[in-house]
Amino acid sequence: MNSEVVERFLKYVKIHTTSKEGVDKIPSTARQLNLAHLLLKEIQSLGYQDVKVTENGVVIANIPSNLPPEQASKIPIICFNSHMDTAPSAPGENVQPRIVTFKGEPISLEKNPDLQINPQEIPTFQRFINTDLIITDGTTLLGADDKAGIAEIMTALSHLSSNPEIPHGNLKIVFTPDEEVGKGADSISVKEIGAQFGYTIDGGRMGSIEIENFNAASGTVTVKGYSVHPGFAFGKMKNSMKLVPELLNLFPPDQTPENTKDYEPYYYPVHLVSTTDETKLVFILRNFDEQDLDRQIKHIEEGVAQIQAHYSDFPIKLQIKKGYRNMKSILDQYPEVVSIAKEAIESVGLEVIEEPIRGGTDGARFSYDGMPTPNIFTGGYNFHSKKEFIPIVAMEKAVEVILKIIELYVEKFTN
Picture 1 (cartoon, rainbow, N blue to C red):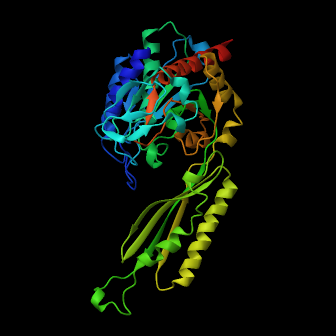
Picture 2 (cartoon, rainbow, N blue to C red):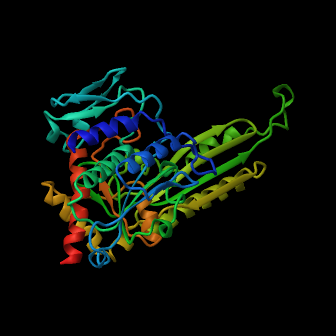
Picture 3 (cartoon, rainbow, N blue to C red):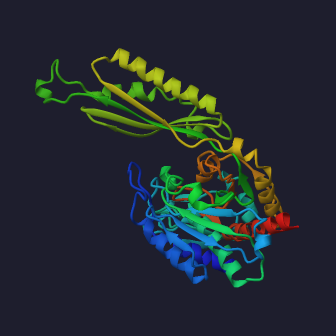
């Protein structure tokens, strides 16, 4: 079982599945379907035939219980889900993973020696001294977010298939596209999944469980200018770029991602394109408190209105849309979903680390749509970057946790 999760992971990360922002269609990139169809065949090869790839590129499989119907009916149907796409923030094509043994010193990346994985930058990293890590060559991300989750779920599923004597209830397996561009949960409904509870395998460090996440909003400010030949521009040209400093001043410098941690909110200007004719600024807002997120939105709205009043000859358009919400208020209503996961983590010899997600998760949307879904660790670090890596032991432990959750549902609901 242990070597299998590594073998699967190394195979999956070599499949290019980067998603793309600003595309209405799901999946946003056809290349994600290559992994989807591979997973379809692999699940079928394990003997599970009730599996399909939907028109939106979602892999969904029904794993029937091997218990008598009267027992199986007592056990809640649970779903394990991960996402197939990798983030567009770093290259995801031609990933060349490498296994190294961590000796406690900084790790240089083979094709980008200026980058190092520095143990001092990562809490608890010293626990992995003399263990094997999977790293990149320094030219791409690794894809542990979230192909590690896929490999861990698939390995657990393979273990159940090879050991039919292990009792389990009805299970659902879901692999979504486009999570990294905020559309993973748009690709399939909770009703289609048909599970009562879920577990997203998409978290970070070994032993962690995440039951709360940011409330999210995203927006765009567009400023219209007017371009004319500079030799004849007097009294005519309106250079939209002159408003760029004003726009960036809307974002408090001490409340940016690089200057905040734990439960602190942030403002993040993500992308700026500016010409004489038009300036477009894309931004996101994040806050664990939904009412405080509304305050952030109001701050931007009022700031844009003031800029517009000062520069009345430059038409300015502001669009803001709320995204996922903090799933804690939902999960607090279903404590057994979280307690079972914590018990599973402890039972495989790990300390439970409960920490907030400074980001989003498909599980947040699933939770609000009727399937309470906490987030469980994959074991990876430095997601979305060329310094991404994952300890092999963490992947092995994640597989054990998945299998233990399945076992605990049988124990708790049939006894």
